[in-house]
Image (cartoon, rainbow, N blue to C red; front, side, top):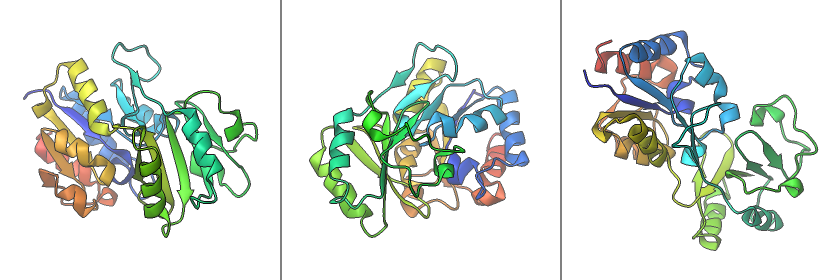
Length: 267
């Protein structure tokens, strides 16, 4: 069988509702690798919030973080590495408009660090850390960030997103996170997972038709559309399902990815 590049989203896809990779999903992905395929994570998360899954699966492949703004081979030099950023002046401009934009907080993220404009009332667990350092405030941001996270309310999410896209239309795209929190993720213009996965496929000499991709949310649309075989999770959005070649019979809480991949690859 031709070697496949299996691009996997994390939240809502590979991870269950408890943000864990089950033993079954881990075992199936390991079997896929042992059969000669490449498994590559493609996530909106920063590396510091996805490194544990990369390590759990014992991956040695390149990965996509920040929805495509960072494509890298973790902890190693890689000739194909790509990292895009947002002008820090945009972050400062958004900060100045915080009240008008109905934002609770603004966080600027890089590969290994993050800066928030305030620390009161923010749960450190939201940033996958035990504590938020008071020194890491937005005013100390000296480099261009890879992405910005903006917390608002569901009531204002659409209008705030539209306003940002209008004001900075040549520089950024705005994506909305799924889940209970109304989080807007600001990324460099044109950034999406498919771009990152294509870099990985080319680096490995794997044809686009041999890319299999799994996802569940709107930020996976371009990825599933790009892949030779795009699979939406049963729990995925209707929008994403319209771009998929197929849909898993089970959800992310039922090892849907593992069941589908085991059957599809005859593992």
